[in-house]
Image (cartoon, rainbow, N blue to C red; front, side):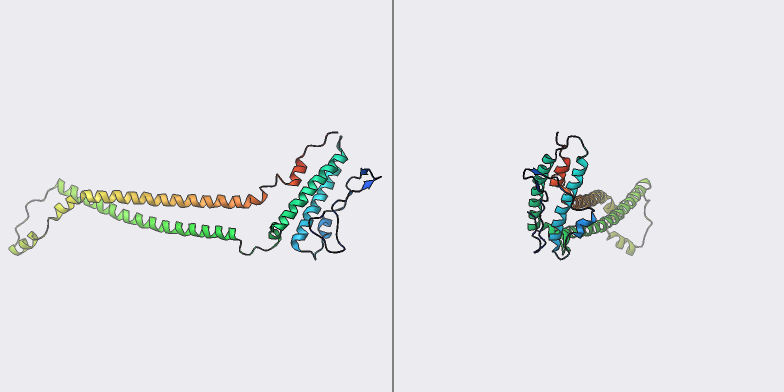
Length: 259
C-alpha cells in the first residue's frame, strides 16, 4: 500500500503488476515515459512531506523499470525472481518512508529551518573559540612586550656589571662635607645591583615559562579549530552515512540472478 494516503479520487497503488491467466505475473509495465513525468504526476495541492514521500517511491519504481529493461538484454535474466525481489525491496522502502514521515525527517527536508539547534550550538562554539583566540593573542603580545623589557633591563645590568668589574672606579674626589653627608646617607646602589643579579635571572626564567605557556595556549586554540572543522564535516556527511544500507543500494548491489 502507498506510504501516504492520496486525496479522494487520486489514490494510486504502487503494485502495478497484474496477473495473466490467473497464474503468471506480468513484468512491470512502464509508467513514466520521461523523468519529468515523475514530478508532473504529483499534485501540487498535497503537503510537501507527502509529495516528497510520493516522489521517493515514484523514483524507485522508475529506477526499477529502467533496471529491468537493461537486465532483460542480459542472458539468464529471470523476470519472476526479479519481480519477487522488487516486491520485497518495495515493501521495505515503503516502511522506511513511513518511518521517516512519522519522525519528521521528510518534513525537515522540505521545510525552512527555523533556528536549527545543532547549527546554532556549532556557531556559538566557533564564536567562543574565536573570542578565546583573540584574547590569547592579545595576552601573548603583552607577555612578549614585558619579556622584552625585562630582557633589555637584564642585558643593561649585565653590561654595567662587566664595566664595573673591568675598570673599578678610583678613589672619589674630595667633596664638601655637606655633599659627603648626603651621599653617605644613601645605600650602596652598586652592591644592590650586584645582589639583584640572581633575582633578575629568576625573573627572566619566569618570563620564559610564561612565554611558553602563551605558545601552548595558541596551539590549543589551533587544535580546537581543527576539531570543530572535523565535527562540521562529520555532521555534514551524517545524512549520507546510511546510503549503502538503503533498499535501493542493496537492490542495485545485488548480484544478477542465476538462470
